[in-house]
Amino acid sequence: MSDAGQLQLLRQAAVAAREHAYAPYSHFRVGAALRATDGTIFPGCNVENSSYPAGICAERGAIAAAVAAGYRTFSHVVIVTDAEHPTPPCGICRQVLVEFSSQLEIISVTTAGAETIWSLSDLLPSPFTPQSLPHL
Ligand code: THU
Figure 1 (cartoon, rainbow, N blue to C red):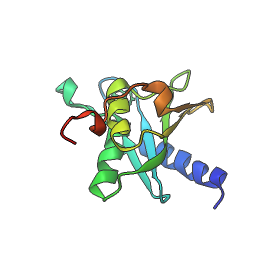
Figure 2 (figure 1 turned 180 degrees about the vertical axis):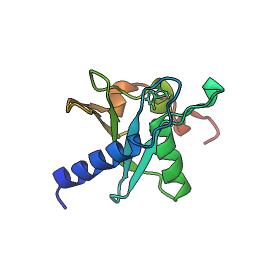
Figure 3 (figure 1 turned 45 degrees about the vertical axis):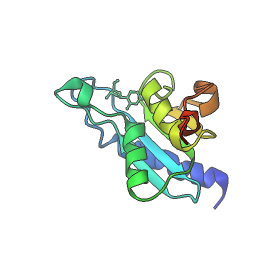
Figure 4 (figure 1 turned 90 degrees about the vertical axis):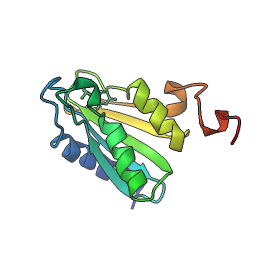
């Protein structure tokens, strides 16, 4: 399948995941779809909680599902929201993503069709990574 075709599938997975977002407090529904380097797709959505800090972002939900399935290297993540402009991943999600894939490409889209692409290294320069720990 072409790169464009794969990215289209990733977009569709993120849009579908967003439909399942549980965001009764912020009303900001986020969908994500993470592409493993072999092409396997892992969707995620934000899951909020009445104890607000217990909520989790869509990107971290996708990472958790992928790692639980045995995947640890990723090439792309698509994020979808209905914000006016494409939203970048939050700082915590950047840190969680860089643990596994420093070269990740982040494609953020809006439901209205706007799109912005960043590399994770642009959004999180000089990251703290496993190699930063002295005993590794
Ligand atoms: N959110 C995400 O799911 N991903 C991000 O990168 C930013 C924020 C969620 C968390 C919360 O449920 C809602 O958006 C508002 O912050």
